[in-house]
Length: 368
Image (cartoon, rainbow, N blue to C red; front, side, top):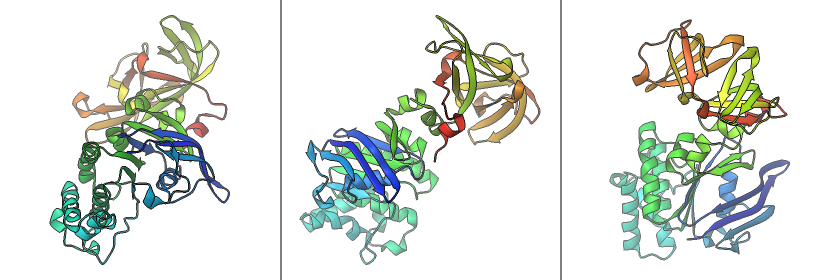
């Protein structure tokens, strides 16, 4: 299996810079997810690695050998696009077996591989159906089976679970990574689904406007994001703008609009510096009534949203500052109502601190 390395790779389409000076390494056997909003360049990045698009600048290397000019069929890559491109005149089994047969695998063995791959995606019972007889989600599973049966060393998966219903998508998230790992394959998986990336990835690449914002493990991306964009894009986060008031060996105090003081553990900023505080919604707690104390504030309930296993409660504090909490239903004693006076709190160690961006918070975290 190849180690993949991109060095200074850029790609333009007219005046649009789809990929901008990307450096990326994917090790043999890794499962890497490329996560980003629509239009961030995720599909273009896959097509560059697959050889379907040539870079304008930079190098793409497999095992240290430049492959910029190598055609797709010589890269040992299975590319699963969002458009499944199944052969309409072939049965599902024939579609899945086509790749191995085209590479010279004996027909009997190729059909056996195809049956196994279809069984993996729970479609072996439709082996003799034609593509037009299947739903869009089923066709996507066939395309996934075709990629698995190809025996390619590198799988490039563009939103491979996007057309599936919610229940099957959750099930296949776990099966997909297990299949890739058990077959000793390397996978690069594009998605805009944060939860999907967290579940399947060994590492996550966060892409924005053609540039890599951060590369890291799911834990690091979620709990220790490098910048405000990643903190906002991955997860549900409260942002509060303020000024560092004082610093001590045990932590810092940050003053918000209206004199509200937040205690944080971070001591890397100086008094007077403008900062942005980021607090994950699920790391906040609520309770009825109560007075404001350290990192515990009284406010009015402005919105309550039922999310199935949890509630999202929006609270307005003094000076028109809003905080939201995502609370598991098991921890909700009394269902809060609009206008209720409640207390919302969080721990100082759960507050991430970032320098205030020169162009403003809204511009810094926007996804376009």
